[in-house]
Length: 475
Ligand SMILES: Nc1nc2c(ncn2[C@@H]2O[C@H](COP(=O)(O)OP(=O)(O)O)[C@@H](O)[C@H]2O)c(=O)[nH]1
Ligand SMILES: [Mg+2]
Image (cartoon, rainbow, N blue to C red; front, side, top):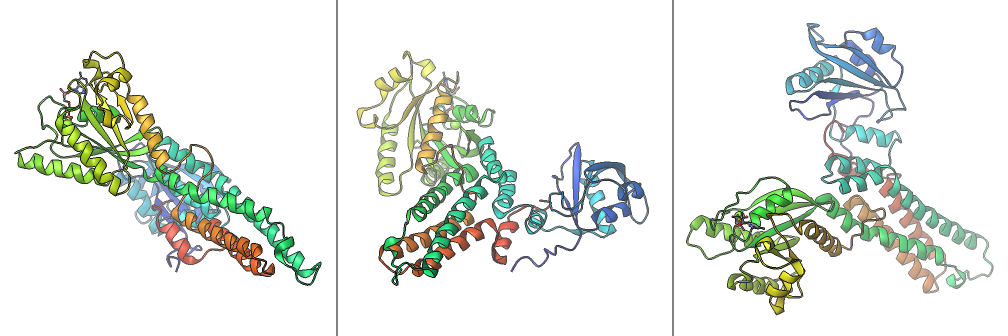
């Protein structure tokens, strides 16, 4: 059941910006009589009531009982249907900071608004025909985007690129359906056997649906990101690399072995992919109880990671422990799913080698020459860009991601496309096996219905509930 609190005829208000000290805060209202209600706690009610659509009105928000001035504000006035929700809306731009923003918000509640539920503004935009479900979900994605590339992909969906793609497949299927129905109504022969049926349009739809379904894994990478673990012996330069990749002095760097005893993590962007990067305790035998736990934690992190960067101090080359780790890792990894492993030869600035290739040729043992290897210096920054780009490529490859094309924006969308694909495949099967064509009709109708569910044309309340409950309040 769709959230019973989503009652579209009630006026709603929500704080739309974070409650932290800031230059501005925004309190958003929507509903048929929202402008009238705001005017009840506004110093210039007449100006607000007479304001044209898409204009700003200056004034003060007042306490509705004491009439005390709460804050000096600008109110943006939007009139239905030309607003985000498709209803009359008034947005109050006040000063930032917890007390002011909440003061304005409480004055609005006292004037007659009720607090908005999560995603209720976007829900109203959806039911008022301002956005289909792919666009509504893209709004949530944009808010959560961690890198420019993630945001671009979501913005593409917000502009309707995915919607158009889905509509094109749907129209193709409707044409197939129409041609079958004409065949059934006016059969050239009594049998109306599918042998005469031209299935090229159905095949094209299947091909497009397959591409869409497989795009989700890549889109998920850009939404959720990947976990990457930096590991290696103590003093290899993991913490220095970590800091360099994050572009901040986050981890303690020192030449004392065992400085990093527990892992630390932070976010970075690797060629547009949001990455949760872990700096870990160096892998070594140790008597230090805390460091021992740290080493165990490193091993656990590795098992759940999307890629491992194994850092080597190239001034020493590969040592006993490095070889032991690599052997253990690859033995285990070959049994389970493959976690990509990248060798990072650090401190090349301290070696006599002219470049990364020469360093790799000289120090990587024969049995590990098949691994991707990068020579870098965490001190000078050399080789770092090539390293991050290569890791991004490794991650993209692991989920067959490309940088181009429109992709799906949620698991829900992927499920709907897969359902449509199953139905189309079934329809194709029917036509190939010489059944009468009406056997395919139901399947194609099911496929069209699944795509309609994706965009929200036909949508059960459970789906709406799942989509909008993932939003934040005020959006
Ligand atoms: N010359 C040089 N020194 C480095 C480089 N990376 C790290 N170091 C030094 O190596 C020591 C150990 O570095 P750290 O990042 O703490 O290593 P970790 O134990 O693997 O985290 C520190 O003294 C760093 O300044 C590098 O690329 N070149
Ligand atoms: Mg360290």
